[in-house]
Length: 314
Image (cartoon, rainbow, N blue to C red; front, side):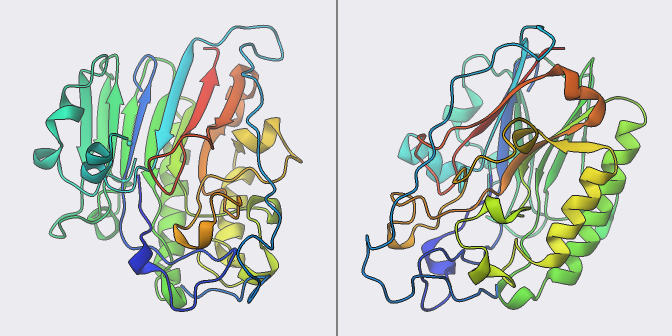
């Protein structure tokens, strides 16, 4: 679960803008296992002048189009720092290594199998976690490139029917200073997923740090060169989908607007639903028939992100 904090927001933050992020982390639990910015529209308007276009999560679809009932659930939540989340009583950018995981999380009932990745040599930066009910067949860390894996951003768990990949994709940074590195990361992640997909279907979940379509953020025109909405990042995500994967939410809800998973802490953005869809479940195409639902739990508080949940019939 990654985190974007107030102090990371660029000067002059406006409605609809998205702050550049530092490191963050993420965690997932599942059944069976688990910045350069554009000038936002509405600049100078008094708070509340922009209408709140809210999203209502529809009722859960418990069966596939073919009538099979869901029996697998995985949830991803960027909790904006695991230790802070525990203090708030409110899980995915963890920002802590395994030794620092709070006992309240270690002792969560129903999740005896826990796996943690963290940044090497940079305490409190990035990191992901995986909490599972059943023990995975195998768990690996990273995407196979030592120069990219030091930040602890990926955990891959092999389950009987699929691979579950928990990821926190790096941000391109204020002024897009990390865009080239981000492009390398996108290519390496895609290669990792394709390798896995050659053996079993794949579920990728987490903060992927991209709003793929204009529909996936409130102010696309104002954010053309903002981290997460550059042509380069959107193209890389499109190439992933074109390589045999699908965006589970947009597959089920292709034209639904105002479905966001991140809101800056500034300016009452969440109350007015001025946000971005940055958190995804991406599936191997051959899991299309197993897809029951992909949920955005925008009413759940505790972070600048909300949880997302995937329901499959395996």
